[in-house]
Length: 193
Image (cartoon, rainbow, N blue to C red; front, top):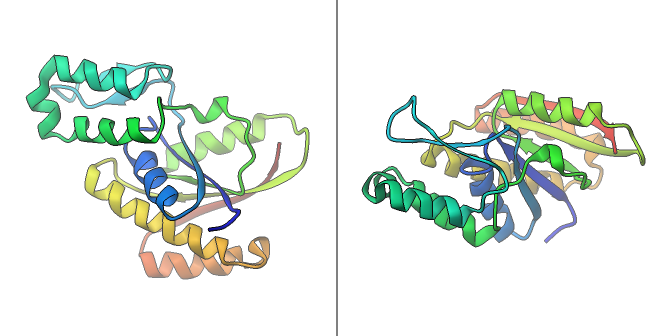
């Protein structure tokens, strides 16, 4: 569809970033997804008992672990369905901080993640100078909101991909999108490696 290189980042590379990854991929975008946290956290049997994994654990291993722990609970709350989708997209979650690929735009799903992405990119010593737009669209971490967020991110990415001069058009595009989506947008433009 286009040459725009897109990354989507949430905290654990499970729900919001993977839903957007799947949706953007189906629309023909070159996309990768990431988490920005130190560990992958999934809901557990109680709010104070999350399932915690390292980023190098595969979606398949997480799926099998939850299946063994409580198939009924994790089917009911949608985690097994989500992990099934994830394992069809890629093998395991990835941390944004471990990726040095160049992107034209990086979408984040919450302000804390946006701050972590900015912090990571500004801490790197530049090798080549590239520009990147970092855009935050707040998306609550539940299945319904992840679906809505994926549509919004795809809509914004499509507007950006259709621009002949993205760096020049970005402010106008974001203003138009923010009005239409009725969600506040954070945006940074960086020169980075």
